[in-house]
Length: 327
Picture 1 (cartoon, rainbow, N blue to C red):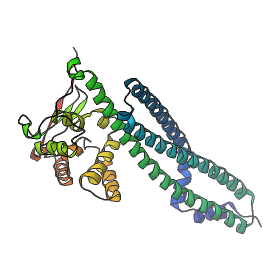
Picture 2: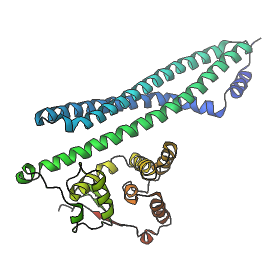
Picture 3: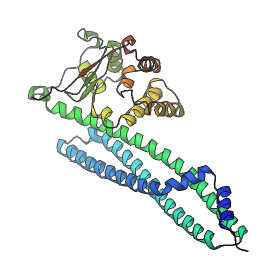
């Protein structure tokens, strides 16, 4: 006995819940998005591989392989994260294409098959595959997201180190050839607390607030890494503007995660959740997060921001240095 169009429609409505239909409605666009994401990962891998080769050349020319060793390790780790993402995304793309074919075949059979039991069995198989792929894809998206954060953090560190090395090259010949004498921690009379977050569009830099005690702690904890308090400030408290402006949402997540994980010693799960919460807070400028240094200070700033009373926030001052207009 033939199944009427009305019965077939009712059968489909009962078979697929809203969540299933939403997934089916979006999976064509997801296949296209996966292609774009794969290209981005491949481009990132190509650029990072070039960076690695460039660093190797610098290391050979300078005859100082040891000082570049840390950067080599970091870039190789980043390349591993990218390779993992490419594998995840390629597998997802294949899974989506296979499901697409199976759904299309099911719909073709659905139009002709008159045995409701066969349709039910075929439909349930499709439903199981939809649920399985939906869950798997959600997990893969999370993994790719975390790998991207790890990769971006490494790229940020490499860029900062590269900028600092370039700055050091631009120092005059006398400073470049003569070793800077290591300062006595007790002779830091000129060092003062900096209570200003300076966002300099003019110099393309972010200058974070710091205290004298913070600098001294760095100085005492890493005696071999810094030759002066100015060296600490340059490397730890002056950052490229691009680290925050290029992808503000990612920067908010990265800095929120670092604040919770490193500053507050929270668990990875707590840090991830905190980072995600900040990620979508579009009115929060990312550099505010590291400037706050603690969750309490950041919460105080956000409360003032949300209540439109930033004039009441007095933990540090925020200044902007803009590029003069050309006339």
